[in-house]
Length: 395
Image (cartoon, rainbow, N blue to C red; front, side):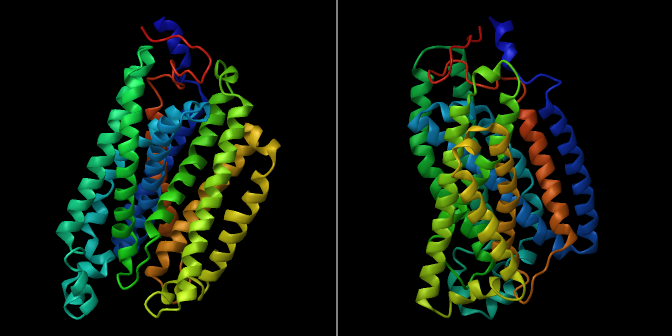
């Protein structure tokens, strides 16, 4: 029985293993370049690093959200991507460790972390009960503590479900997901406010955290779909992961693409219609000085084009075509986050630094290497999920 179960592990010669090796090489090279840049331009390094770090944390949290959504709703679409989703959640300890450069550079990144700025700004003084360095660090520790705890329990009980046909693990997974999804929503909202919105502490938006959550789930789908396509290309998974399941994943990718666009449009319309002096400048900084060209790219290529492509039933049912669209969306998701965060540092004009690319590749390469490494040592599909064909249990 155990020998049969190992047929569903990631083999040493799988293309994903080559991806891991290359990602690790890119991550190390990007890290060395970033280390060099930290000495040459420490302020720019921290700015670029923050964007890259938040993006990949968002992907990991998006994986956690999708995992819990599927445990609550059920369906084969979630079963076929469960192992990649679990691997995504297991990168959270790495991202917690990679928070250290930001923790040491708070006074460089955030205006509210500089006492001299707070002393001359009544608004910062009013918000100082929440926006202060010790409380910021404590909150981040709480966020990662909650996320890692939920992730570990989900991963542990998922493996228990592989080993038994008993309904106990499935029940615990569903109940944890119900409360965990609520906890994730609250913590992601506060994390978005802390890490990104507080870069411009005079501005606020009540939907900012929701946009971050929607974009993170979209990015997570965009990452795990190509991985699932690579898994499905080899036996025995060719008979397990079918075109109908890719069709479902394509519909979900389209749904979250529209949801993200709806959230962004809602924020824009409400702020623009309100025409309040404390809100409008946030968009003015992103629609002038060259930043408007990135906005147009996002409208055309992050929403309009993939929306039109994903309407096709044939694209959604063909793994390679859907994976291509998903890979493009990963790049565009990063572009959107860059457009959201970077103008806080360069409000006058568009500024793209070589460290922006180095940080994205460095953090992303390490994340992807750990992600693929986490796929090893366990079956790539759940062995006792009723929505999939009957597979042998691990003895």
